[in-house]
Length: 229
Image: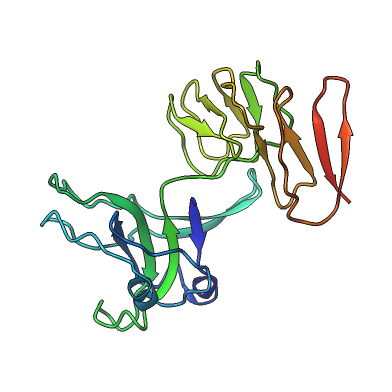
């Protein structure tokens, strides 16, 4: 899922001056993320379960918030101090996501007024910007949204995998990886704002275009390109 911004939060959350709070969603939660949800009460009404153990757990408030444009990366960035929940004791509950919301009214007693802003399950989407062969150890991608550690496994939409070779920083658009693992399914990535879809040669592909008709072309290396009409 990665990060999901709630539509209502886009309209109302004042990042720098508002009180942005964070709660942790437990693995027993049955909440199905929906961008149209507006208030924290809808998270709970939809089966959302907040972490209730260990005993030291408590919701946190974002501090040190800034908002600025990064002209080098051509993006607008919201930043805050790292959220510290302290040393949480071992418990039977696991964390599946962090829920960010704009607190209204000065406390957490009125979740029906607190505006949902973002749900983050710790994953990020990585989208290819150029075709990749099975033997490639460099992937060209859209700038990544977060720092990635050496050894991180990247799972492609068709089930294939590779492993990062070295640490990578937010904004990097080239990833050094282990050779791509063989898979019975094609590995392919689609970016909604990029009209070329690249798949890896030598694998079966079952593609379902989501943005209308496409043209299909084969290059000399056997790679297939889907280009939006």
